[in-house]
Image 1 (spheres, rainbow, N blue to C red):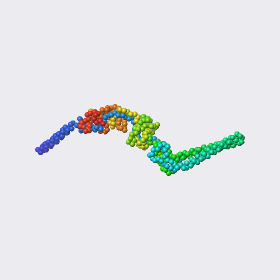
Image 2: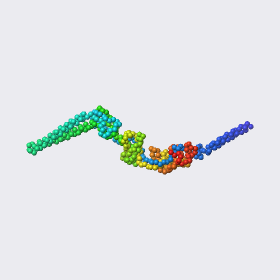
Image 3: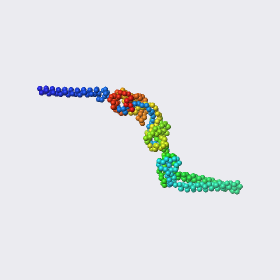
Length: 387
């Protein structure tokens, strides 16, 4: 009798647990409305913010090659001492603008001036000797015609004239050399520009050929950019180059192109000149630019992040939102503007489409789209969520 009561009690307990479980399961199904783990209508879904969508737009686009490098002066001149001596004065400092022919420094010219005066005196003496020798020759020729002297005396006079002329030429050459030495005591700017370095001070003893100043021509700067061999083919002298340096935009042009390819880097050196008449740019400034080969107007573009590689080498695709669901659209792309993060779309989308940009997780065709802050799936076309 006791055994029968225990069995009946256990059976009643099991029945009560099963009934409770069934009731809870029914309530959960009713609350979920048939949802499979947050999947409306039983399918997968994705939640997007307005910034995750973009619409294709039309704009102008440049076919350009990016270049970077350091801007250097078009000309850099070293001013060297042409003689040895003591500096009497130095009249310019670093950063000072100078013009061609301007006096930069002066040597003590005492020795050179004395040598020049001595050379001038030698020239005067040689001229006098030549004049006397020519007069003697003339007299001897008269006496020879009268038979008063032998022909030998005339020849001696002729040799005296030749020697006097040689001495005069030598004296004149020495005089010219000493005058150049006097001129070299004045150090002049060979070109217009800005003093980059000054290596001397007044009172110093300077040896010949010593660098005294460095002058840079800063009105035009030049950049030597290495362009990949494949990208260098369309580059031509005269093409426009847009630069950004020191937070400002500048425009330059391709001046020269190296005739050979660097065997190590497989690149071609392109020399770009940037006008700098007001001196806003400084030599040594790092600049990034774009060599513009052509400009396309009215092309359709998308953010580059919207274009993705298709599965199994199927080309490039974009994910569109069509009737509140994800659709996969194969696209054909053209130019890419890495600086602005844009890509030209030749086919596959239209101006009214909504395209998913950026990394929003795994996407698949047919996934329902929910917009953040909205209650249901995105039903519209390209009018919602566009940038």
